[in-house]
Length: 305
Length: 231
Image (cartoon, rainbow over all chains, first blue to last red; front, side, top):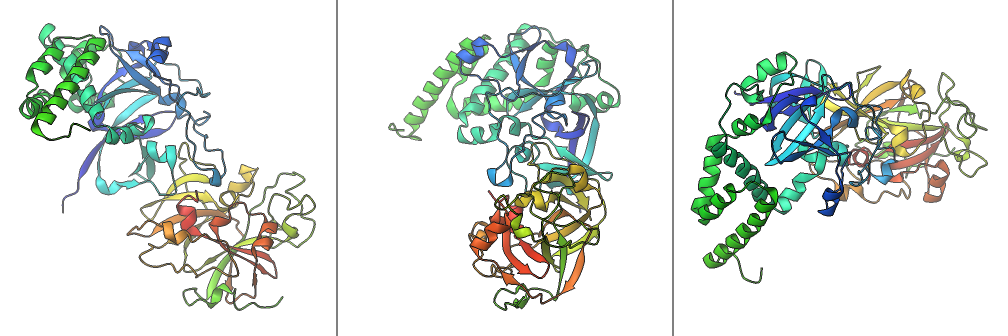
């Protein structure tokens, strides 16, 4: 009988250990690499509200920023959010107000804090944690779903538990942080939009910048044991990270499917020729129009829809 | 007290011949509305009288009678003194966390908090207590709705919203150390809806039945509703 293996990244946040699927971890960096930015007026102008004390980090040498959640403070036992279920059972589970700023504990010294860059269903996401402990390979039998007595935020964030060496380790579901899973199921076009945006940026860089193979990139999939065995240093640059981060086969497969299926090669290449987010967004609108037109021609959808 | 056959939970064939009874925990804090009962006698050897922590009408405390919880021995799989409990962020305060028991991950909860009692002294709540493991069989296995109900118990047919699950679920309750095993039947009388309000249990949907017996009130928890969150 064969047992499925799962690779989990273990990390500390709020002086407690949590787990995370290694598959979605793209890279780990020292927290001091990034400059955090508060969500500002320009975010509000386009309808982005801070969620769970969310900030953003800007990827060096690029125009792109990634939402950052400071788990070190959110999951600290003295934070408001941690004990946010202070309501009777009859009043239900805690549901955070997306626009509300919650008092959290002070973060650590920042010296050893790490930022994990994730790719969650083509959505970039960054998590700040106290430290990274390591990667473990566990059998599926060691992972159990959380009891149905848990509801709401606690279940969204930690749907599974790892039994390991007599300890129980909550496995974080990054999609639950922003409640993104439901949105994705409702609107699959969001995936396409973000995929094109992300891939477009990477592809553009592939063609415009040389690859620095000697760069100090800590990719969990390739350097995980080294990365987790020692504290990761912070001398990391992100430009080569983006280039190495994308699996060429995966990218090629995705593009092939798009081209074969929808004959959108010209449009895709046009997007790759541009890098500015605004322009990409405009082009995505054109892509949608083009896609709708093709689908109408093929009779896959009706005009009234 | 007269025996009421209609409401006697032992009448059901699915109910085993013995039951586990333990008094509800109360805070040790000296809050005037929660510490010393005006009437009734202690039901536990330690003299910790189980009372609803909120006064029923400003004059008394649920008529001043001790409250005890009752489980069938068939439901209780284990009684433990202490286990490591791992808190789960964002969970409501009645859930202490999770623990591992015989290779199962189970939630640990406070029955009193869940029912709506105020437990103000957490230290008391976790010191010198016991943990009982209660199994909740799959609905497919069958939990007759009428197993514990008696009188005009106001349970809004919670079985109708029970999702199916294959394996039985479990909840670990933190309870008073004064656990007794008593033979059945127990002479008792089911409370009417109006009488239940005197007991001041806020979340009656979590209760299968409340009975008056010689030592006060007996509360039979609705474990499936507790498991499902009672929202």
